[in-house]
Structures are given as structure tokens and as C-alpha cells.
Image 1 (spheres, rainbow, N blue to C red):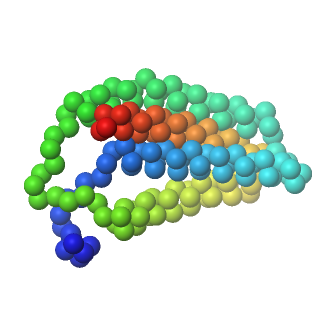
Image 2 (cartoon, helix red, strand yellow):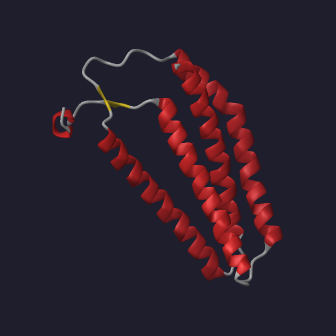
Length: 155
């Protein structure tokens, strides 16, 4: 069935695949922010390793702990409340999934670039890179763990 014939129908996605993709991309954004900071440091720009590390820990640790405490319950509730999909629905096509994911990646990447440029312009010393890396890496690890849980339940 062509994509045009699917217009207006609810589209279903697999939770495990979606969470794995989202977790991998979030973790990758965190790693990219960290690599940006390292590259800035290597070329001799003014960066502050202590405050960058504090910023990464100040955001990453609470985010990871919060997600570790709440995500098992969210996954359990989602699996318990899972029902058969409605009859008038289709699985999302690869092209529409690619388009949706590309839009999300473009929005997130633009936000990260704006934050890193803001850090450079204001002379933040890489603190924003630490915040971005800590947040996205913690969210990415959490989503990857949740995706594995959903995957085990679907098997």
C-alpha cells in the first residue's frame, strides 16, 4: 500500500525500536557535545574542566536516578495496559518513520548547536557542553534500557 493510501489512519510503531532509536540518538548527542568540548580544549580555547564536570554531574546524575526510579514502573504500566491495535490502523511505513525521526533529530540538533554557540559567545568555558552531555547521555541510557525491556516483552 502506498503512503498516500495511509493518510489519516492511526500509525503504530513498536515501542522497543522507537526507544532504542531515541536512546541511541540522545546518547550520541551527549557524546557529540562532549567531543565538541574536548576539541575546544585541545585547540587551546579557554575551557573550565572542573565546572564542565560539575555541570555534567549536576544534570546527569539526578536525571539518571530519576529515570532509573520511574522508568521500570512506566514500562510495567505500559505493558500491563497494552491492548490489541484498532482494526483501522496500520504499522508506520519506513518512509514516514524516517521523516518523523529526521524532523526530531533536526530540532534536537539545532537546539544543541544553539546552546553550544551560546556557551562559546558568552565565554561559559564549556559548562553548557557539560550540561548537554550529562542530560542527553543520562536520557539515552535510560531509553536504551527501556527499549531492551520492551523488546524482551515482545519476544
